[in-house]
Image (cartoon, rainbow, N blue to C red; front, side, top):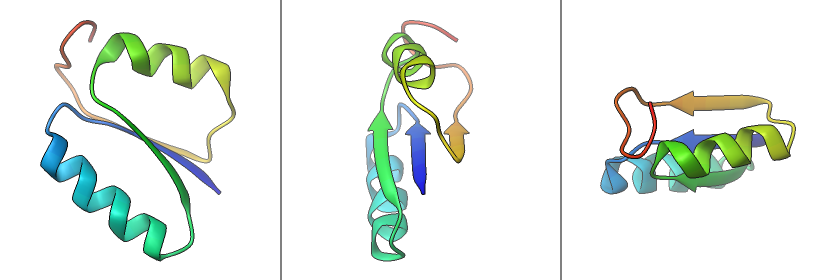
Amino acid sequence: MNILIIDDEEELATILSEYLRQQGFNVVVRHDGANAVEMILGQTWALVLLDLMLPGKD
């Protein structure tokens, strides 16, 4: 299952992604809105965890 985490708080995103990987998920992390849009449109995701008020693009 593919999960995309979009959060500008890098420490939080790292902790969350490490936990999810330990549970067997494929996780991709992005830290700004512009990169997130490309990732969302480029693949199919089972879950997108999206932070609000991101740098670059909300």
